[in-house]
Length: 366
Image (tube, rainbow, N blue to C red; front, side, top):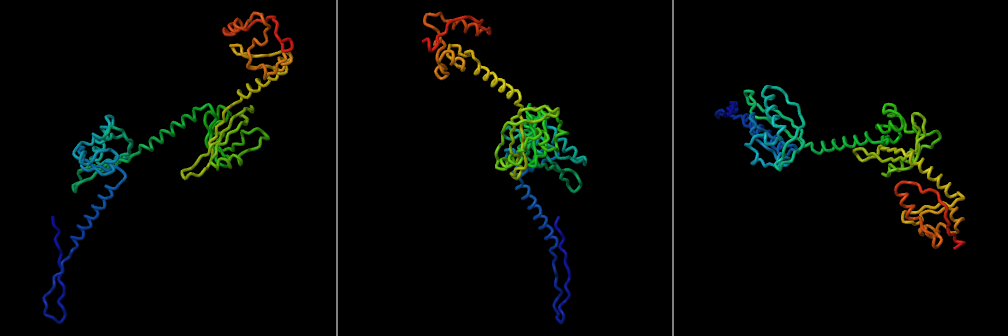
């Protein structure tokens, strides 16, 4: 329908016999031009959008397809327009487009939802889908517009965070985070088991509350290292809720915000109490062995001497440096039958060799 051009009569020129002039209004043409410019701007927005924007009729036949849709899903517009939108959905998602169309045709809103779509090469991508109805002058739905936003990276990041959270929560080590001022921000189940405090009891407190009385705090020194991007690790000890003293290996790693600023630390406490106790027991036994008046020697299964105490040095005359690495037969007089094989077989079946008397060759007697 063409717009009717409006006319207006101008008053005659004063003092002349000239006929009246006719002025033609261009209002209708201006409105049409503005509408065309608006449509062109919207088309440009759609075409240059980073999101895939597509449209299809109520039966699912594809009607439009922007450049971002081609980038995301792999189909050129010429390949996909005219095909059914269901070609983009995995089997378990086939119903979604039809359900959205039904809701829109009945005047019901379709909230944005997350789903999967299948690319031309068969990959599945995670998308957020937003749909809206386009109606004709009579209010009938003539096409459905859908915006598909790629959320694959976000979903992968969420999955990675969930995986890491599960690892932290199920770790046997105490893992918690703290602010630079030492305030505890998070507290895992391992920390609760190791130190006895629940998350509700620990979060919001200073990390100092688990330090033994009189233990100097290393917060400032640790923060200096963290702010340089360094990891701080050292052996220390902690007091549990039931007042037990435990040995721990502590590790502080910097935590950065989205701008890259270091805002806190993740702290891992590994309980090394059993290891430290075992080390102390070994050291005590080593002291006993070293200070014994008896000769105490160890050997490998092939008879090579591997340790040699001061008592052995006094008894046989050989220093540890001279004896270690030599064969145990060094101590056996010539012609004396060797019990090496017999003793080794006894040890290999887990038995203790019964004490026996023998003659041993010392450096002085040799």
